[in-house]
Image 1: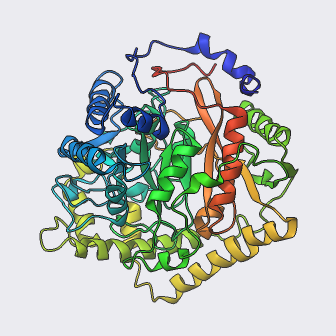
Image 2: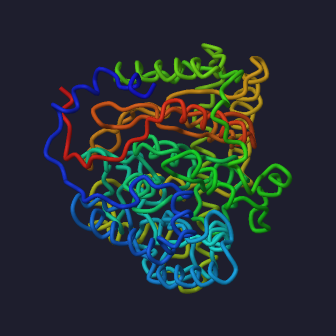
Amino acid sequence: MAAGFLPEGEAKAAAAKQKGFRVREFEWEEAGIVDLQKAMERGKESARSLAKKYLARIEEIDRNGPRLNSVIELNPDALAIAHDLDRERKAKGARGPMHGIPVLIKDNIDTHDRMMTTAGSLALLGSIPERDSFVAERLRAAGAVILGKTNLSEWANFRSNRSTSGWSGRGGLTRNPYVLDRNTSGSSSGSGAAASANLCAIAIGTETDGSIVSPSSYCGLVGIKPTVGLVSRSGIIPISISQDTAGPMARSVRDAAILLGALTGVDERDGYTKESKGKSHQDYTQFLDAKGLRGARIGVARQFFKSRSSEAMKLMDRALEALKDAGAELIDPANIKTQGQNGDSEYLGMLYEFKDGLNKYFASLGPKAGVKTLKELIEFNEANKEKEMPYFGQEILIQAEEKGPVSDEAYLEAVKKNGRLFRDEGIDALMDENRLDAIVAPSGGPAHRTDLLYGNRDTGGSSSPAAVAGYPNITVPAGSLLGMPLGISFFGRAYSEPLLLKIAYAFEQATKFRKAPQYLATVDEG
């Protein structure tokens, strides 16, 4: 069926290719977690040998060659950690499926080691948090080897309303491994590019609205934006307490499911996780079923099937046909009636929560913090504008600083409105009315050209309903145009990850679209 997923535009790709980079064959190209575990179990590899090979891969194509610039900092202790894990495996056996697996994490996730956590900002250079984030703790407990941290859209893309995704003052610009002059989207830009280019086995991103789903789509990955509260946010530089979450970015649904299970758990530092008790799982692979689309009722949110590219919409319609061929019943259309009715309530809530959360984060860093408040961050950027603001400003930071406390009536009303429109009268109402298992929509259009002068270009997407509701969303590769991937999203009710994974896995197995990047310099759209 995969051959049928190549639209006519794909046939032009060969003629459109411009000279790119030839990347040497990598022994573990497209290898999954299961493949790497088997290699370690048989003695063909060790955690240390794998870490060395992935680090060499980073040096070859991230620092040199196509220069993806996706890794902002390497972990100087990675090989030592891997060596200790090898000794443990020999003495006691593996801790689980993540033992010895090389992982990259986004540079807004705290680690108490010799790596910094900066959100891509020069204002936090040298900042080493006083303890690990819950995510880092869970990774270490699972036996993962954290190779380093990935670049991102600075402050998770909540600094300017005309920013360029994938750029940060500290890290510079991340490039898309499929077509190098195309954007990676964001804000988990480096995690998307790195995982796609096989610089790690799997990566972790964070999302407030689209920051896992969109770069996963642009970079040909599976991305899981979990239910808010399934994965703790403690020790992650915040935007919105009501919407933020970390999640897996991987080359397969199985790998994403394995990683998701390693990240769950109740954390006393994040009260939202209390709701996940009895609703989370340590092994999400148990829900993977290649026949999982049989009898599934999936609503088609046609309101999101809009793009400047007619070829992209043809591809999405072919994806819907694949769902039906695999046994799903499509309710088409099944639009979210409240979509677009919220006005600026999402943005208003974010402004209040960002100021409150960021000031609390700075306070957690102690007296050595380079900046101690949002106000000081704004002043730092202004004093260092040649390095921090050469392309776009910080108007969002300024707007957030102007907001009052989260006890303000305007904030409380915005949060209440968001819950009513996106949960009660939005996703829940639609699914109740149509007895749906999931909702499907395009994750976004093909990657736009990176433009540091004018900023990002809207290529469509459907992340907002699940993001504002705090509900799960999974994107899976669904085709490509001129060598650039596109994804399709499945989202639904709170804590419905098992059902969404079942659907996403069945779609993936029926289509098997994922292809490794080609590192093209550019493509001709004409």
